[in-house]
Length: 173
Ligand code: NI
Image 1: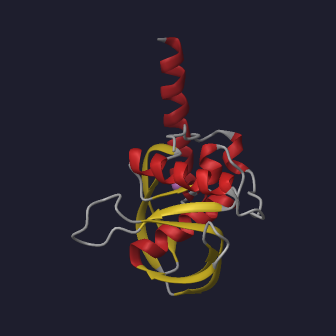
Image 2: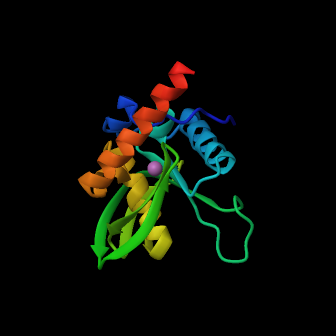
């Protein structure tokens, strides 16, 4: 397993649509392991393959329950699809690919996701609260969508200006 570099906004590679996984082989198992290790190292709540420059529909999410140690439980979802979404919730999100920004995002309160594991076995996962947010956020990555796209244009503009200004300063120093 390896810790992979995480692409950062505004890298255009974060905007591509990921391809469905068709081969449930050794490479897929390696990718899932790398995603898991990279997420834990960050540390983050979830990570999608396109964030490490692999355009495949694979995500990992933290599944730590209250009272458990972070990193003990990580779920891998291959070809995940939201088949049902209910209600609404507002949750403060961040992203390993979007530095220095946290913002409230409106998402479905409950989702049911159909996915496969690394062997190709199908399963269904129902989630609410934080886990539902993580699932929606990571599945967005597979479509090239970032949580930035779900906040107000004004907030996004302010963030972009700040980011580009600090990058320019870093370049000049
Ligand atoms: Ni993210």
